[in-house]
Length: 462
Ligand SMILES: Cc1cc2nc3c(=O)[nH]c(=O)nc-3n(C[C@H](O)[C@H](O)[C@H](O)COP(=O)(O)OP(=O)(O)OC[C@H]3O[C@@H](n4cnc5c(N)ncnc54)[C@H](O)[C@@H]3O)c2cc1C
Image 1 (cartoon, rainbow, N blue to C red):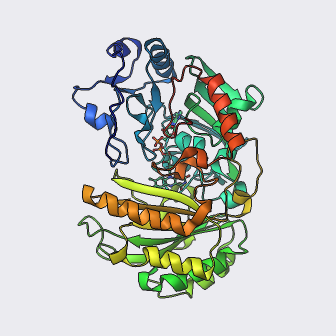
Image 2 (image 1 turned 90 degrees about the horizontal axis):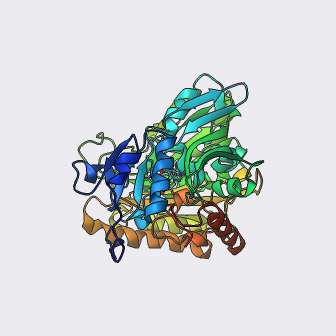
Image 3 (image 1 turned 90 degrees about the vertical axis):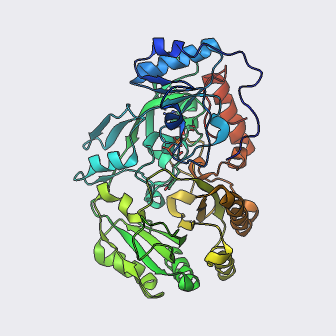
């Protein structure tokens, strides 16, 4: 991604070497060996230019960095992985939280405590055998904390709501450098903001989340030739309209690049797929998805029992860093005209630069206000669209952005209304997500929690 301005221009240079005196973790400054690697986000299309990178050892390191930043007029950003990287983090002291890796599961209380460096794959593996599920999304490489703060669109959200509903408490370093646990009793406004309002209000070091009893879990991917996209999308619309809340289906147009490390059947190929999870008995799940299996030529079908620890295999998304240009929005309806338009936008590899256009069925608890007080309570529509292209060479960036604009046109004026921040593309306006009253309330929480503006998230409020 190109830079438009030097974020460091016109500022007095603080003494960044003093970071080394206050933390136990590794500090990398421009010019150090390894600085470029440490600065890189998972999404390598965003060329980040932090002032420094600190790989914190523990919560006390976070406190020390925030206090020093406050004294020296620096800005601090937590970036566990960088799936949601934006250029908003340029010029900040970037905190890597990998070492905050504690996981404590209390199966009887149905609660987990999770450090800010923990990825969903690690937490889900810890739930194997408990009969409990957590509100994870598609990708096991995404951090639990980054996802929850951004709202989080989970597999099981149709039954339990957005991921942020499961946030019970957070241990957070505020803009003043104090570390404390907050919950609905001790600081209801802050917890409201942390549930889907983003990473603007402090650096979270640990969270406590709800877990949910679901002893029967099935899932898998059905794959069809791209030429049958219209018929598969029609079956997807039929299955999703009126589906029980335990069934979740996501349909995708997929155009795989001709990369040598991809297996032969998919390398360079185009397909339409439907990823499914089902919280219930095998025979009932098979009955519910039967119209999908009849919709076209099934090239592969992995639907079957899944352990919670292997949930990431359902969508089987890439976990290695890549140059990713994405857009997320909501789709008000999935009628035959909309299906035709989606096929027109993404059904022909010669006419799109997209790698994936995914339509996620929401509805149920995802589209109904409920749960604890939260900045993001429900989605703006029954379907969510998440599209991206992989800019393997820079010349692909403009065609990908043009294809993403085509997708936005299909979504129409609803656009990014009430989409989780986790799916908001780097170029989208964050204030379009919330209504004006919510934006004003989030800004008030920000002023109280971080009056000096020491903390910056990837989608700043201003
Ligand atoms: C392939 C792929 C699949 C995805 N699937 C889903 C999905 O199914 N559902 C969904 O909702 N999202 C999904 N996402 C989006 C993902 O959840 C977001 O990118 C999210 O930001 C988490 O990614 P991360 O852990 O790398 O966070 P980062 O990108 O590292 O951080 C994002 C932001 O979160 C905030 N943050 C993170 N940690 C802290 C902290 N400790 N304290 C304060 N603020 C913090 C900061 O503002 C930071 O800029 C997907 C993304 C990709 C690339």
